[in-house]
Length: 169
Image 1 (cartoon, rainbow, N blue to C red):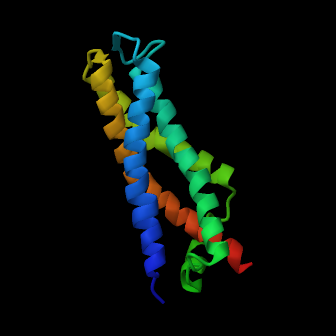
Image 2: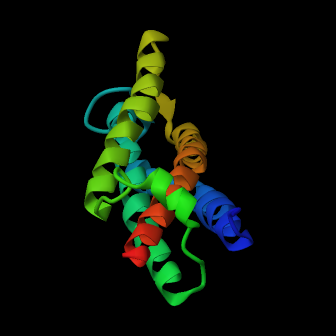
Image 3: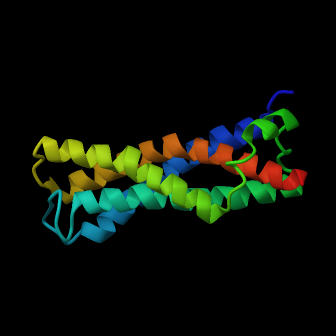
């Protein structure tokens, strides 16, 4: 049995395009709001690029996980999205049977390790100069959108599998 059109829409639009655009706008706005009164941002310090990226790399996947799990569970329960076919559920069982909090912590830590840490390390090794606020707002918006574009469909898959497993029991 193949994955339905509703599954693809959930993964590509609801958990792909929408979070990408949303995180571009939201993270750009948050960066501007937090740092609008600062002249420039260095990599480390009280108002810093490094800390902001590390925090965002944890919070974005964590919150996406909590939200996507609730949405997927509600949509599978209501019948808007059918549960994944049984052959997919058996492939995805085990690890997928986690709480939103457990999944969120896992994806948040993975975001820090695989997303922010390499970027911050690269900026540090390149001896990056301080960013102007406007440059950082653009950088942060694009970086967060790319992070969302990569992790949101993966998290959506986890949430859909989790919701399907809950629905089948």
